[in-house]
Length: 320
Image (cartoon, rainbow, N blue to C red; front, side):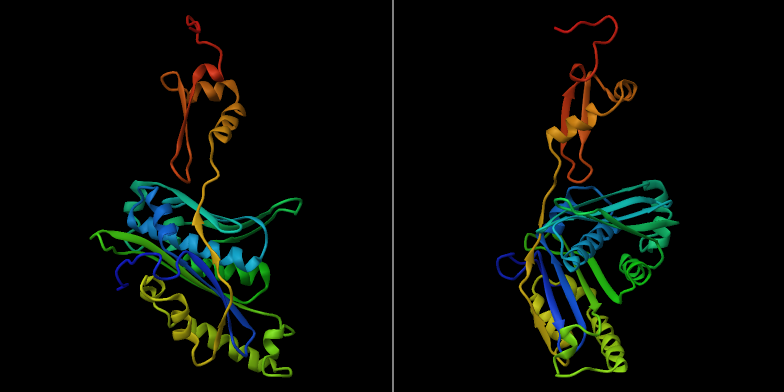
């Protein structure tokens, strides 16, 4: 069981810690989400199972986005035909995150309390999208949702779409808080095998054989699997201590971390633009008691507009 919630100033939190398993062609990311995960998840009234799913998606999105090294928006999105229709986790460099999901509460009750990705989503797909800042070209990769967990689906994405070896672990859960309540935390580990010519292979001096690199990769993935969910979520465990626990026999080098925080890009102006883009019939269907209410799916902020700002007066009515 993870330790009790501690003051975020006491230990590094809400961060991505890049690392390298020494003398191998393996690099990785450790994602630690504390107050940021709690803030994002508490903006929604999801059942605990789906809150955990959202937290895992946030941790995976942070790991993937940081590994891709770009400026702009990264989106992890899963869509399906099951109880969960859509799941979205956003990362905007240098570290703003948000997320939400849509689900059918009645169908979810039939899925069970420890439902897998297939039972939650049914047939569906996982999409990873990069929208670079500036003039860069938008990129999207899509694979079928196949695997028990979101981490499994991410593994498959890299094998199928990127032809790269990568391995993921993710966890999310609520841990005891000092005030007697509970706080949400999420964490992820990502490993990526680099090309044979990368300098990471040359740390021992000279080239290494394909057999050695294969063995080093398998060993690194096996060691990553020894990290428990409790360790990934433990607020009293320093992230560097966790990496040392996993890879002390291999040697592990850590690099400068990047910070994570909640951030939503919704605004009154954006909400107004959404309404202004709709046709009159659609607007008439959305008006309730002479008002439009636009609610952000990510943060639940609501923006209220009067009907007459977008539509002519209704028959028999005049503006005051």
